[in-house]
Structures are given as structure tokens and as C-alpha cells.
Image (cartoon, rainbow, N blue to C red; front, top):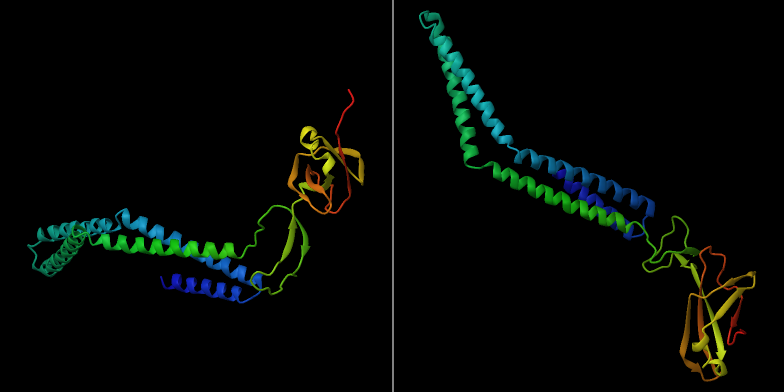
Length: 260
């Protein structure tokens, strides 16, 4: 149990060092070590609890009873040889041995009947709970050492180097999701009433004029820019192969009428 508390303190110290700006890799190694130690203690505590629940004390009673029977058999054998006075000392010794074994047997039996083993189970259960709490704490500390992005995407910029010390809230990298891209248009008010009727738009990218992109989503702003008298339209097109990059120019055609 002392080793358990020591490992727990080491884990807390590692977390404090990490928060103060220690080398991230060192803090991670210490957290992993504390996690493994806590996990081993948990397994040991559970094994001890199972051993007690299966009746380790009952086995002590069986051993004591076997010792009583063996001592009684020796005493009976020597009693049969009582005709020779030289055996009296050995008989007395055997009798003493039997009495001691019998006392040990009754003591073990009394302890079992008084359910003193339940205290051992409660103690082992408490150790299991402590080990589980330490394991959960170590797991939490370990997860804190891993940086996870809020979205799935591609790193477009890095602001720190390996081994750098950063403060809370400082950006580490920038991430973009370009699995689909958005094109922003500004349509004149004269076409405003025609867009909801057709909603047919084709897109060509300057670098890929041989390919026509079909929008998967079109959003029309509910308000008009009072200065330009135009409406903002956002066209979202799929980009599964990530060929289209942010900042590229696109040609957008709004089909108002089609020849039959």
C-alpha cells in the first residue's frame, strides 16, 4: 500500500511538472509509468481479494485439523507401548504436541466462526477501490498528455516546434477540412427571383477546366447588400480527392433557361 501511495504522488508530481511547462515527452513518459504501476497494483489487489473470498482462512482450519489428527495418531501409537517405562517421556511429548495442535485447531475454527475473515475481505475491497481510483486518475493524466484536434482535417500551419514551452490557450497548429469546399458568389438582384426556380449551377475550377463540379448544397442569403445591391450565394461542392485548394479561382454558371 505504501508503494501505491508513492506511485500516486509521483504521478501527481509529473502532472505538476507538465503544467509548469516541462518537456512534453518527459511528462508523457512519467504519466505512462504511473499508469502501468497503478494498473499492476489494481491487478494484485483484485487477486488478493479473490483469494480471500475463496476461503484462504478455511484452508488454515483444514491444515490445523490435519495436524490434530496426526498428533492424535502418534499419541495412540505410543499409548499402546506404555508397558515400557522408557516411552513415558515420548508419550508425554506426544500428548503435549496433540494438545497444542488441538488448541490451534479450535482457535482457527473460532476465528472462522466469528467471521474475522470478513475484515480481510473489507480491507482487500478497499485496496481494490483505491487501486481503481489511482488507475482512473492515471488514465486521465495520460489522456491529458495527448493533444486531440476538434475536427478531422489537414494541418495547414504549425506555430510551435518540438520541445517548445507554450502557455495555456496558445495555438499549436491550424487545421482545415477541405473534403468539401465553399464558393461565394454575389448575384445581382435581377436574378434573385430566378435562382429558387432553377437552382441549377455548374462549377469549373481554373486549374481543372476539363471537369464539371456539381454543387451538393446551395445557400442563398436572406438579406441584400445595400451598397452593391447584390445577394450572397454560397455554393458547396464535394472535394473527395482534395484536388481543390482554398484560394483557387472558380467559374460558376447559373443556368436560367435550357433549350429543349
